[in-house]
Each structure stands twice: as C-alpha cells, then as structure tokens.
Image 1 (tube, one colour):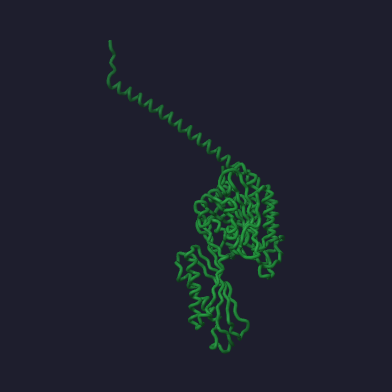
Image 2: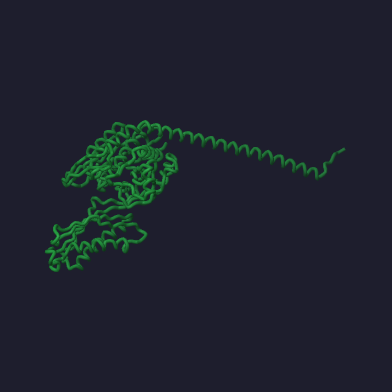
Amino acid sequence: MVFRVPSVVKHESFFFSRLVNSFFYSVVTTLGGMMTQVRFLTLTLFLCSIQVASGQELDRSIENALPSLLETYRTLHANPEISYYEEKTASFMAKELRSLGFAVTERVGNYGVPNRTCYGVVAVLKNGTGPTVMVRTDLDGLPMDEKTGLPYASTVRTKNETGEEVGAMHACGHDIHMTSLLGTARMLVQLKDRWQGTLVMIGQPAEERGAGAKAMLNDGLYTRFPKPDFAVALHDNATLEAGKVGVTEGFALASVNSVDMTVRGVGGHGAYPHTTKDPVVIASEIVLALQTIVSREVSPLEPAVVTVGAIHGGTKHNIIPDEVHLQLTVRAYKEPVRRTILAAIKRIAEGIAHSAGVPGDRFPIVRIDENEFTPSTYNDPLLTSRLRTTFEAALGKDNVVTVDPVMGGEDFGRFGLDGKVPACIFWLGAVDPKKVEESAAAGTPLPSLHSSQFTPLPEPTIRTGVKAMTSAVLELMKK
C-alpha cells in the first residue's frame, strides 16, 4: 500500500525546511560577523596599546631630559645675542646637535652685505629611505633691556650694527624655540626605530630683522642640503596657556614692510611761517591721510595695517625745520594688497607736498628696504590639519585650539617657497594659566611678545613644545 502525503503537508514540510535553513544561515552569518568584529576590535585594541605605549615611552624620555633642558633654557635666556650677532648662540646649537650625531654645517647664509657674517646652522640626520622633514628654530634676541626680575634675567649690554650700545633680551621666546628644538632632536635620536627618512634641523639667525631665512635660502639651503618635503616650526604665544598648542590653517601671519619717509620743506623762523614750506605741517597731513589707505583703497574683506610708529623733526621751539622723518610699518596677507598700499603711500605723500607748494625736487623721499621685507606666512591646510590630529592624540583635544591669523610677521614663510614646500608654524602656549585667568577676569592685558616684562613659564611650555614637535615629526616620517 502506498502512503500518500497530502499536498498541504508537503507544502508545510518544505516551508519548515526553508525556515530551519534560514535560521542556521542567520546563526552562522551572525557568528561570522561577530568573529570579524572581534578580530577587528582585537586589532584596534592592539594598535591602541602600541600607541599608548609609544606615548608613554615619549613621556618618560621627555621627563628624563627635562631638568637639563630647563637648564639649557635658562642659559640661553641669560645670554641673548641680537640679530646679525648670534655667533655664540649658533656655536652652542651646533655643538649640541653635533653631539647627538647630526652632520652639522655652520655659518650658512649670505646677507649680501659686505663684512656681515650669517650664523645659520644646518644639522642633518639620515635614517634610511623616506621623506625629508625640516624643523626650524630662530636664534636672535631683541635690542632691549629686560625688566622681568627673573633670577636668570639677561643683563647683557652689546652694540648694534651702528655702534650704539643697547641691551639684549629674548623677549620673543626664541630661547624657548631653541630649547624645544634641542629636546626634539634628543627624542628623535632615541626613537630612530620609529621613523625613517632625513631630518634637517636648522638654526636661523636674524628673524627679528626678516633677513635670516632669505639669507640661508640664498646660500643654497635647499641645494647644498636635502630639500624638505615638509617644513615645520613653532612659536611661543603670549596669550595662550602653557600646556596648549594653537593651529591656524591658511594665512597665519602677515607680510611686513618697513618704510622710511623724509618729508622735505623749506625751513625758516617760526615767527615768519609764510616764508617757509613747513615740513611739520606737511608731515602731519600725510600721517592723517595715510589712514585712508586701509579704509578707502583696500577691500574691507582684506586685512591690512598702516602704522606710523615714529615722527622726528625740528630742534627748537621757534625754528621751522627743513625735514621731518617718518617711520612706518605696513602689514598685509596678499601680495596685491601689499603693492597697493606701498604705491598709495608714495602717491599720497607726493600729492600733499605738491598741494603745499613744495617744488618737485623737494618732494618726500620714500624708502622701502626690501632686504628686510618679510613675506606673509601661509600654513598648508592639509599639513596643518594632519598635524592638528597628531597634536590632539598626543596632548588631548582640550589642549589643541584654533588661533585666528595675526598681523605680526615671521620670515619662516619663505621656507614654503610660495606653496612648493608644505609648511606649518604652530603656536606654543607659554603663559601661566593662572595669569591668563586673572587677566581675563580683570580685563588687563598680559605682557606681549617684545615686552620687557614678557615672562614665559618654562615648565610645562618646554615639555609641551618637545612633545608636540616630536609627535609631528614622527607622524610625517613614520615607518
């Protein structure tokens, strides 16, 4: 007898089979996915553990080096040398880098001025095949007396290029920069197993005169030595808390031109001004008219500054002089804006002199020293973004802040060769956090860079500078 399964039963059996198969497939798929996730999680944790261990190793190395680095900082701070005279500072930097195994070349640079030596330092360390990264510090102090009252304050007296006796002070933090570079060099020598390529560390003179970077490039910095794939620098910040760094993408610092103007007239007795062409009055009109350049000739969307910083004329109450001298600083980000401003200064000065009846052969003389011109500094956005991520991992996100562009100048921008070499300069907080808090609460400004009262907080500023710069180089040269 043949048993026949009803069709409805066959259908339910088929459905049940499909259901079972589907169930087991789901289980297997889920388990497989879970295993993949487990493997991925395991790999992630492994990589994180390596990163944490590497960070801890760097922290320990910096901690061990910190006492000697702080001593180095105090020595540099107490013994500043002004622009064009950084001989001993450069020799010290060269000696320190040479002791770490770098191939060091001294006196790199050519100012194009007879009998003026350029004390540039270039140190090269090769570690296999890979990118070339240049790290730069500046060397020079400022011609001013220090009034911080620190136990290691500078008491140096020296002479400038005109023979005038002046004080000397690291009021812009170049001593912080140099110490951070030396600390970074030590760390990278100890961590050679974690990077590959060619490391170039340079000590640049005459940053305060806007002349050092140009001099070193003119002397073959990128032809005599390996040309960098990346150029990096740091600069201390007089408003940012120590322990933090600041980043700016794109334009970070302005171009700088120094303009000297001689306003000429026809002098005479102060009781008979109608017989003269008074250069004091003409100069006063020029000073006021120059303020219309930014407000009326430059787009409101383009940052620019024209400041008259000095005016000198006359010797006695009742004498109208023959000349008055003006000194100006001009700031901009974009080259067309800079050219517009400089052309307008000359046009306005001559126009006002003409309207005062000054003959053409006595028009104002406008001098622009292009040897000490500083171009704007542009931070490569991709490089800056990459370094920001690195800083956040090394220092914590709360310790990495965005800083607005400023109208100060820095000739580090020249090393970027108008975008041909990706470059980035970042800010290093250097102020006691308590002082920042007190300043904000009271509404009183902190001592700025170039102030005789500027007092960086060495620790944790130097610790943070070394860690940030070392992490940046390791990121750019990682194996």
